[in-house]
Image (cartoon, rainbow, N blue to C red; front, side, top):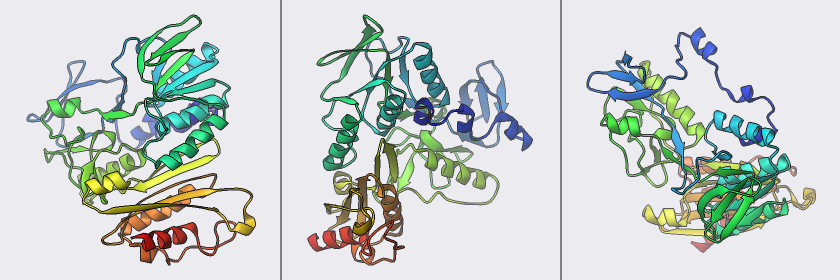
Length: 398
């Protein structure tokens, strides 16, 4: 959605994976504008808002997630938005155009906030990010978060740290965000404070939820009732690194879980093999990516972690035109096993993290990673890639 709001994607239809008509062609009936009020699990029936009951033998829950809003006055005012689905994106874009918005405030500093800051700057809005912490994208190492902050401010985004929203009020020429440290006049406010799993129907139906608050599932996507499956942003996933069931709502995982549930329903048994937590975003001229665990998560999972950051070139030095790439590896002191990785740079960050995700998936140790066979060309790396170098340096520190 940020790319639609930022006018990179012109046609919202390109964001629709499959239309109701396409579903109908394959024998699947789609009922839009139809609210489910409850599930009678013992009777095998879904209750609709119009009083109709739909019987089922098998049920798949894909209720997704809900955008988080702070419990403060004024969040229902016109011009205040969250961004969770295509309709939200369309509404934001139309509001900006219809009201000739020139100023925007984003509350929150996760990767959706980062993408939105670029989108809003791309269409000429004066943009401010309000955040209760000191640095954006706190899941990344503070050194890398500092690089992200430099990219924000270098592209005209104001980062207002150590501020929490208190209220949204009517301003002199639009809206006013009242914070713990003052007031900010703006034309539009977007709350990007994360999401929580939409589990009301599941809980009322008696399904078990996990420690994260999301629906508990097994590796076949079964819930605590064998005939009910759950997939996507409403349910948990198994993290192969922490060996825990966690809540990590990302679109690629939702697609995979849906495929697994469908295969099992169709009689072609399959399990969802879990996640390692790979994720990335682009912001202005910066690639930012990570996978696996950071040191705190690793300690909580019973490891003895060590980490190290190196800086280098995403291409061979002879081909470098000033690009810098930062790469951090985290490994277990006892086993030498890779536990996580983070990267930030103008190019090459995502490709390194994708490679290191495969290493995590395979349970590789640093000594293997330091000499593994990678495709070499000066346009893409040196003969010794930064992955090799980072692995060898960290191994010496263990």
